[in-house]
Image (cartoon, rainbow, N blue to C red; front, side, top):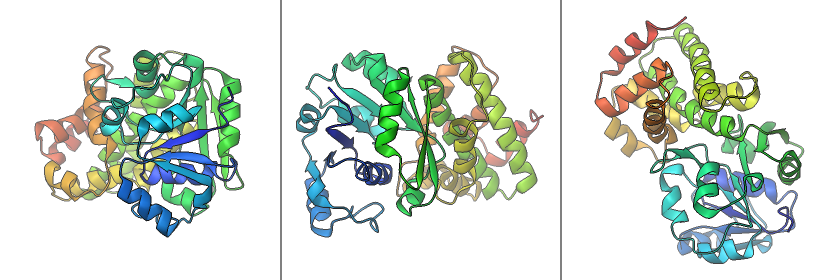
Amino acid sequence: MSFTDKIAVMGGGSWATALAKLLLENCDSISWYMRRDDRIEDFKRRRRNPAYLSDVEFDINRIEFSSDINEVCHNANTLLLAMPSPYFTEHMDKISVDLSEKYIVSAIKGIVPEANMPISTYVQKRFGVEKDHTLVVSGPCHAEEVALGRQSYLTIGCNDMFNAEKFASCLSGHALKTITSSDVEGIEYAAVLKNVYSIAAGIVHGLKNGDNFQAMLISNAIREMERFVNRVSPRPRQICDSVYLGDLLVTSYSRFSRNHNFGSMIGNGYSVKAAKMEMEQTAEGYYGTKCIHEINAHYDVPMPILDGVFNILYKGINPARAIREMAETFI
């Protein structure tokens, strides 16, 4: 079974839409699971996603849409998961099809909240998917810029480097360059942490602490990320590679970053509840903060930035106070 044939995109958001656009540059056709039939009908009529990246036009004759997740899973060889992590199990719990022989590619920069484990680990344990059949897609790549055709870079991770290279060829194009890696678990944890640090960066921006302080925050954040990832998944890696540091930088500084915007609202005086209600899209770092905080209870890695964000989001600590306490640890 070749996983470069019969690829299904799972999810209807901006990242799923951007990835579908990339796939259709290299594949004859794709399947696309969206949970709402009305969105599918709008998509077919307008030839574009009515809710996300709606300027991007698609050749709908090359897309087989369905709201039946089991139908999509049955017909596909490869499932490209691109739904928000807080709703991941809501979708996956509906699956009754055997996935053990499928290829599962996670483009979810989050963690399974109920299980506190990375997506790849979850699908291996829950659905019996082989380790060599689980891949991850990550890196400093905003969906909006992919849609605009701006030069972007993605890292494809898999325990089997041949499979990583094969799937990379499905996404590569004139404006999208791919890098391959075998560090699946490290990539997944880094993708969760960069969202946490992006919230911290947004809070600092909202508090108007300035660029100098922001630079100190990010330089300490990459050290903190390295400490945690090396502890939970010890292996050689270069933390300055784009899939780690690059993703942290783009998420912490870009106006496209929903996690930064969420944090900025909190820094500007919004309550956490009000900021969540104001967000039109999911700020995955809100959920990732709690998950990593709970995971770290077993590892006890020094993580003052994570702890500060957790205290703001879940304990109601004043943001300015939490940032001041955090800053006392900076080096």
